[in-house]
Length: 635
Ligand code: GLC
Image (cartoon, rainbow, N blue to C red; front, side):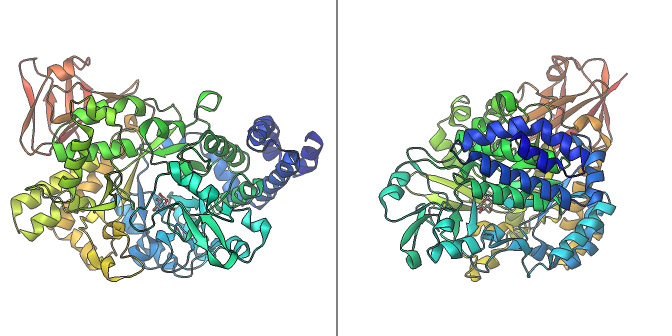
């Protein structure tokens, strides 16, 4: 391997050479752990060649960026992200650049552009069924236009996040076409079987992801008379990472995206990339070895690019995506705080903080140097994936509690103002997730229908409460487009056969820029939601203590409706206090004093008011769905 390395090292790039020589022993051991066979060296050498080639192709301005960025640039309180579909937001990549001003006005400086690469119309899963990893789908524009947008964003100090769909390709990817035609080499890129013998074994222990629209985990391919694994939709063929060629090709794609100037790469559905009969085929140890390997490759070629593992799994499993043991903080830099996201919806539906607090233990173990994506919702459904134990610890029955949440958010529960819908209900397990926009889930759609101003105001308060609670926790806030303007559900997907089977489209609006203009008319819903979301972002950016240095501490639940957290640095202290009930709540000042917050004043950045910490028998009043964003000031 050393001799081969010398050949590769002739790259006239001392930084690359140094990083490669340093990382090679780790890379080699990870690679051989996954691919121990006789041909391991041959495959590893091919991978190294791809790294060298990618480094050679890396534009010099990106190499400079790599050097400029600190290793933890992404922990900063000055970042605020938004996920959006380019076509539904403003048509195309070329037109997008004229809307960067709007995003800047709001304070967003990191964009997650939902999948842009070629994906067959009608069988696209919102772009997560990729038929060509190097070609921008013509419906968005061209690769050149993407590069131009990235450069424009870069010149404005904005960061770019894109996806790599690692687990599967579209059934129209050229590998799938070749496999279908009978080429053994490409059939080995997928999990393909002659009959149902092995598929049946897998099915015994593999859960279904889309039980309504795509039941089962295998699809029959008539052309080659084989069964192929399709965990998601039947048009998404699972890649077989047991084949080292698949890893090499996909790392090559990862580095291609790095060289487009991607700052955060969202690894789609990593929990699924290794399968074994007799298991759930999720979160297997090999998944982590593969991700650690990918992280090493990225560190060598494009160290400025951070990795986000989109693992929407149980809290204990999510934590492992940050790496464990020798690889602690050396796997994914980011994970979605899916547990906390769901727990905050739990608070909204129940007006209580107990389950949320019981669910904190695991997620507080996040290693220093890694970060969360914090969000109230994203393009996907909201899964109630927190642990049953958190519900039990709150003296509630997990089954009944989850049923209540489903009923509440789908508007079935009596007097629930929420207008969501159940997604992927599985009658066999009783599981279901939730679709619906932030605004509709917070009651705005229902309030507008009933033309009740008080309910409209209350639902706006809920929207802001949910955003504030998420924005000041440790991590990078990722808004979902449309939420900044109070978009309610869009039911037009029901009329489109390419979307009607998937109600997640109800919360993926097509932006009406006339509606967005209303943000400028004082007193409109758009104005209230936009201006106050903007204010939250501004406050976040003004407080360095909000940077994600694992400095989060929860306050004791002296009032069951009020969630409070403290963020501390050597120089500063921040306290967020959030009332999840529709009644005014009183919080004893003892809650502050017991945390050492005494003889200080509290400056609320939200209202501009100042408070002195009172005596134990006095209290702080929090408005229904109201909150405080306190900076602690010495008297
Ligand atoms: C991820 C995406 C989701 C998609 C799935 C399959 O979970 O976020 O939208 O359906 O992967 O690619």
